[in-house]
Length: 512
Image 1 (cartoon, one colour):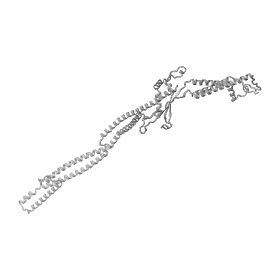
Image 2 (cartoon, helix red, strand yellow; image 1 turned 30 degrees about the vertical axis):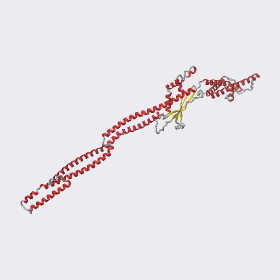
Image 3 (spheres, one colour; image 1 turned 45 degrees about the vertical axis):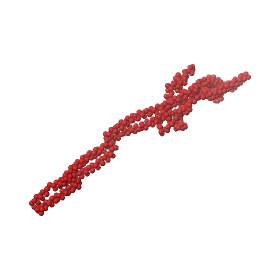
Image 4 (cartoon, one colour; image 1 turned 180 degrees about the vertical axis):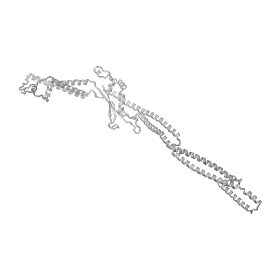
């Protein structure tokens, strides 16, 4: 026999099996009782039926290349906005009153009621977004619709209320689309009006500037250059004509002087005096006749020159006609010179004016660019708004004709055949798991509180001595019969419990 206690060893599978056999009813009865209570409570709990409806987003029927939509709100944002509007207290309260939902409860069930029917209805409504599978015309992964779930105490009520909610979503979407489209058009109208007023102001500034700087505008440079070139050509022509008129004046004055010098000496009177004294052969008379012949020849030459430039107007006085013609031509020449000089001054003044305009054109061009910049910006803004406003009008008309993007019911709200809650199978399995936990805890507690020596190795753990002889249990024939009877009874009860648990779970699976 050893002096020291043997070291404690951990229990093995055989030990656990002995404990399970010994505490079988501490395990089996809590499992069955907990399962039975939870299973029965699950069937006593009121059933809830869930109706489901699918709403699909129908794309715009007219191609966007012809009519671009003026409302491009994301589908998820639209659904969230409409959900907040439809789940508002006013909307839900009207639906609750119409279908007499969530009446006040009495008894224990009333303890679990929140007291606010609107909040209860919000909990019973679920919105599930549906992604596209490329069958609706959208890209894969994009939102193409959403599902509406509503839970109620009866299948018919769940379907009716879900149909009401589906109609509210469709009507609200149509109303919201038309309102957003109309508001977009109205906004563009107001912006277009402001842009038109600003454009008219800029146009008035440009017109006033052009009226003030008429003649030296950049657009008139080419015409000013052409006019200036023409004026300079006219000035050159006028100057040439003026020079010719002045030369003609000098020529006429020289003719008049020669004619006057020819008339200043009365040679014929002197010839008559000499003839009264001398004969024609007298040398002085011969010389005087020669002088008279030369003077006549000179007058004839002057008359021919005058007649070659201008025909005589008065032939009644052949002696006075040449000098009168010379004087007349001198007067006409003087007037011509005056006209040319006046024309020259006018042309020089006009040339100076156009030269000044051309010199002012660069500065005017810069000022006009500054003034026109605001006009061009206003014009571009106005044209852009006008185009957007026309597109928005088309989109608004499209929405009013219900040809734009709309919600359509793909799957009407269903009439549920089985309740969605409670899930009796999960409730049954939950009760079974709870019973196992309770039975295990009771078994452990019983083992820890009921300490006994049942086997040889249990005695060796507490007594520092080796067991030499053990006396087995000796039972009478009556005890053996009673043990056999008790064993069969336990097997029967355990079989009944197992059958009840399996049958209960199968029934829960069948009923849902």
